[in-house]
Image 1 (cartoon, one colour):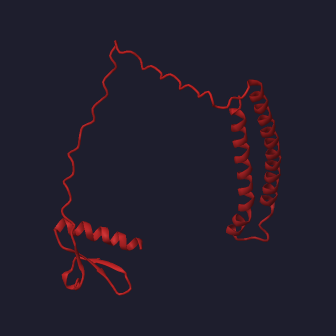
Image 2 (image 1 turned 180 degrees about the vertical axis):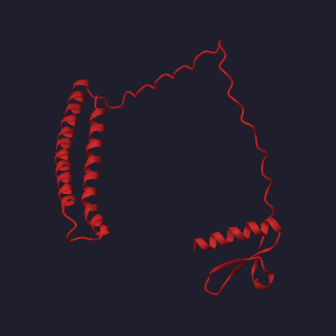
Image 3 (image 1 turned 90 degrees about the vertical axis):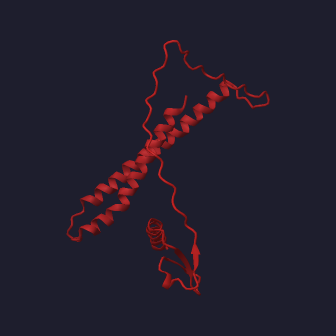
Amino acid sequence: MAMRHIAFVILFCAASASRAQIYECVDQNGNKRFTNIAAEAKGCKVLNVGPFPPAPAPVAPVPPSPPSPTARPATKTPPVATPSSFPRVDRELQKQRDNDRRRILETELDNEEKLLVQARKELSEQESVRLGSERNYQRTLDRLEPYQRKVRLHEDNVANLRKEISKIR
């Protein structure tokens, strides 16, 4: 399918450059074929592919003008007022929720760090296995790959949990 599109683009470009006719042919199976050869195009539909518009002239970039010394700095837009019907949370309740969230994330972080240590240990055990039984280097790589994936997964989890903990107020 992609080859047909590439062939069409090449034919289209070549034909438009030489102002040749392009024909769209559809066989009994519904397959489309494009050609610019009139002898091969019996019973085919002529495509109207007028000339391409000329390319626009290149425009030189305009350097930004320096700010005038009398110009006022941009002012911040005032914050939008929250509707009175919008639910509000008491500061103490929000602080309690943040503390609960931090505690949960820290527990998850501890668990992930333990799993990471275990995954690294398993990987190092697998790496220390001698090549006596595996003389093919690719087999060794294939055998180690799931252990390496597991280590990367836990490293990513630890990094993401630390990032989430740092966002808590």
